[in-house]
Structures are given as C-alpha cells and as structure tokens.
Amino acid sequence: MKKIDYQEIFREIAAELKEIDDLGTLATYIPELGGVDPGKLGVHLMTIENDHFAYGDSNEKFSIQSIAKVLSLTLAFQMVGEKLWDRVGVEPSGSAFNSLVQLEYEKGIPRNPLINAGAIVVCDILVSCMDNPKQELLAFIRTIINSSGIDYCPRIAESEMRSGFRNYSLANLMKDFGNIHNDIESVLDVYFNLCSIEMTCKELAHTFLFLASEGISPIVNKTIVAPRQAKRINSIMQMCGFYDEAGEFAFSTGLPGKSGVGGGIVAVHPGKFSVAVWSPKLNNKGNSYKGMKVLEALTTKTQLSIF
Image (cartoon, rainbow, N blue to C red; front, side, top):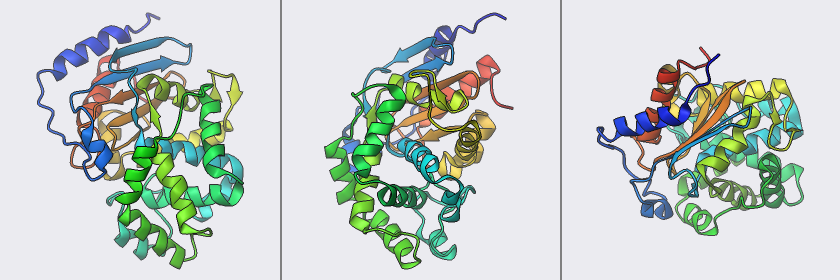
C-alpha cells in the first residue's frame, strides 16, 4: 500500500487556507492569551511507525489549555479506575464549557471530564490521591513523552487564576453538592496550572500517540493505560472534546480530538497517527477556526477517519 505523503498534503492545505479569511478571535478573556500572534499556524503529525510530518510553526510552544484535561483524566482513570464515573459523566454537554446552569440542574455532577467542571472534579481526585499533585501530574506527562522540557507557565496560571471567577463558582457549587472533597484553593491551583502547560505541536502529537496505540506510548515503549481505558478516553474525546461543537467536529473530521482556547487541537486516528494543529484565532464555540479546517481537509484528502 502506497504511503501517504502527509507533507505534500499539509502544503496543499496551507495554500488553500491562504484564500480563506481567518474569522476567529483570540481568547482575550484570559489576558495572557490575548498577546499571542494571531497569524501563527503549526501542524505536526506522527505515525505509530515513528514517521514525522510538520508544517509552519510546529516547533513553537503555546498554551495547550483544555487539551491537558485529557492527560489529567488519563492519570485519574489510571489511579481510580471505574470509580471515576461515580463523580463525572460521559455525555456531551450541549452547553457552554463553563455552564453553571447545567451543573446545578444535574446536582453537581458534571456531564463529562473535559468541560471545566468535570476537569475540576478530576483535579480534586488527583489532590485526594497524591501528596504533591502538581509535581506528580507534571512528572506523569513528562514520562509519556520522555522529556523534561514540558512545564507549567506561571504567567498563564496566574492570569487564569485572576480571571477564573466562573471556575471558582463551579468549584463552590460542586462543593455544596458534595462533589469536591478537598480545599477549593488547592484543587483550583492544580486546575489552573494544568491549563497553563505549554507544548509545541510536535510535543503534543508525541504525547497523544499512546491513544493511537492502545494505551502504549511508542516513545518510551511503556503502557500508559490499559487498551480498554484508551478506548474509553478516545470515545470521550470523540463525543465531548469540542464542547458544544463536538458533533460538528465528528461530522466534518471523523476523529477523536480535543481543543483548547490557546488555539491548539490534537486528534488521534487509532492504529495510525496523532496530529496536533495550532492556530490561535477561535470561532464562536471556543475552537481554533483554522485548526478545524486543517483537520477536516486532512481527513478529506487522505480519506482516513474512524468511520
């Protein structure tokens, strides 16, 4: 079977995108993200055979924001197993990623672990299970990619905290319903730092390759999660990775994925590859405007999706 020339496909997609206006806007509600160059575009794809294909600003670090929620979920799932689902659901939200109304209606049980409330519950689980959750979470992520160069960004974490009134409200509401077990400041400290992690597209694609390889990281030849857990994490990304635009992403792209308001998107084709895209301008649902188009074009041109 002829190998796909992803490099040529990325060049084609980039040329096509030059003809399209970037209608998105930066995530200025987090002040540190408002200063990013809006014209950046990076792509990196890594196959499970360790082939690499890159385009543009793929080696420049950016704030991965909510993409990191998949990694905290992975660690919590690894630690507590199926008990995780007693405290957080697996359904698409159908509402904004920071909705208080939905959370109150559902008595403090978040719809899924990838919206803000769900990720805060996951951080609460990590605080309960670990002596030093921030350091141990970072060490876990570094282990997946075999790199000490992954780190939190103190400036972004501080910016998140100063503007995080809605997240404090979510945490307090869940605390009132009994679904946050630890001190709210401690839990949100982990959460804000989680969202501040910076990676390049290359590092992001490397990190998520274990979800394309039945839970085994080909980078370090180590099992990160069991195959059945990897399947479930991929399923959650497919259904819930793009907030209330998850259906649109599944419809247009056909891959499990996760977005972040830093403009990044990572997507996985189980058995084949992981791919990361970065373009900072967001659409009105909080997802990268051009990043969505890059991945739609990629699966269209290659005729590769999970469907």
